[in-house]
Every structure is written in C-alpha cells, then in structure tokens.
Picture 1 (cartoon, rainbow, N blue to C red):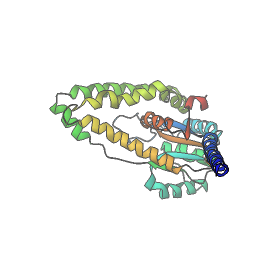
Picture 2 (picture 1 turned 60 degrees about the vertical axis):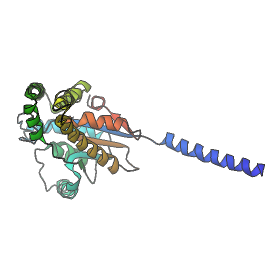
Picture 3 (picture 1 turned 180 degrees about the vertical axis):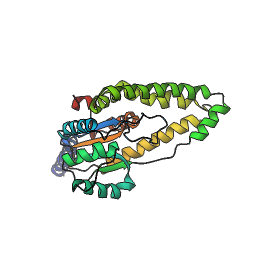
Picture 4 (picture 1 turned 135 degrees about the vertical axis):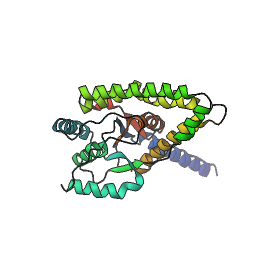
Length: 271
C-alpha cells in the first residue's frame, strides 16, 4: 500500500510540475498598440484634427516608409478599428486590394492596416471594434442642471489644446513622427485625462451621469479587448493593432494585466 501511495504521490507531483512548466514556458504574444489620428474628416469624434491630404505623394511616401518599418515585425495579425460584424465586407475589400482591384480610401484602417497586411502577406485584416452609444445629451443636461458647465468648458480647452498640438505636429512632421509623439506615455495619459479628470465629476453624488458616460467608453474598450484576445490563435507570435489614440491607454492597461501578452512600445519600433 505504501508503494502504491508513493507512486501516486510521484505521479501527482509530476503532473503538477508538467503543468507548471508548460505555463512558464508558454511564449507571450507580443502586441504593438499604435494609437493613430483619424485620416478621414469629418469623423465621429467630438474633437478631431483638421483635414490633411493623406493621398498626396508626400504622405503616400511616408505611409510606405511607415509600413515598411512595421512589416519588419513579421506580425501574424493586423487588427483595425472596424466592428467585428463588418469582417466579411472588410475581407472582400482586402481581397480586392490584394488582387490590385481596389484603391485604398483615405482611412488609416486601409492606408496603414491594408497596406501593412499586404506587406506581411496576411490573408485577412482582423476587425475588433465594437460600438456603444454614449449618452452625450444626458451628461450635458446634468452638467447644466448642476451648475457644472464649467467642467465641459475646461474639458474643451484641454481637448482643443491637445488637438491643436497634434495638428501642428502633423503640419511640420511626417506621419511616423506624429505617431511616435502621440504614443508617448504622457500623451496617452493626456488623452485619457479628458475622461477621468473632467467628465467623471458631472452629477457625482446624484445621478453620476458623467461616471456612467465614462463607463460607456470603458465598456467599448473592454469589448474591443475581448475581441482582441478572442481572435489570437496558438500560432500568433506578434500582433499589430491600429486604433484611434484615445483607445490605447485603456487597451494597454487591460493587455498589460493579461500575462498572455507582452506590450511592445511604439518608440521601440519606430526609431
């Protein structure tokens, strides 16, 4: 009996060791989160850059340079800011592009995402966005009813300063230089603070309209995160995600706390 017990203990210990070893040796999926400006204008954002001609020869050359550098990552997936239920239509457009029968629109999803996917020889560009309506009118009404319109005014000053800064950077620099700048940790924090510093105060202690508004933004990003982790497979070693800069601080936080992933900093790739 003691011999059988010893063998059983040994087998259990071996199983635990094997499972633990397997967990420790599993390679992390590298993920490069590229926060972008939106190329097309007007877009759906309340605060956005002025229009720039991203289809002119200079910008097209810059996009070639950018995607040439990004292609060196040998990424196995490129993910873009398109709802997951648009996957079939994006697949169709991407196949046309690969066959030379589709001209890219001005959207960064295509100008960077499609272009990069082709250079990586990917069969598909992954759509991982999820749209949730945000109740602006309720928040604005609450701010007015609580004598908190000054918060929206302060937010506007902050947001317009950020946009004017990025607009100046774009006028003076290349697309790569702009992406390097807006993906700095302090710039990601600057964008997120628009939600956390101002909006969460609106209706606090009463109906919490501001906090609920911000929760809708977080919900959207949690859904995007769910799509990201659901669409990676065992063979994926490196993922490039291309999304509006405002999403990146939250997505970065979520992915940093998932030990299946390793965040790759933009400035370590775009040198």
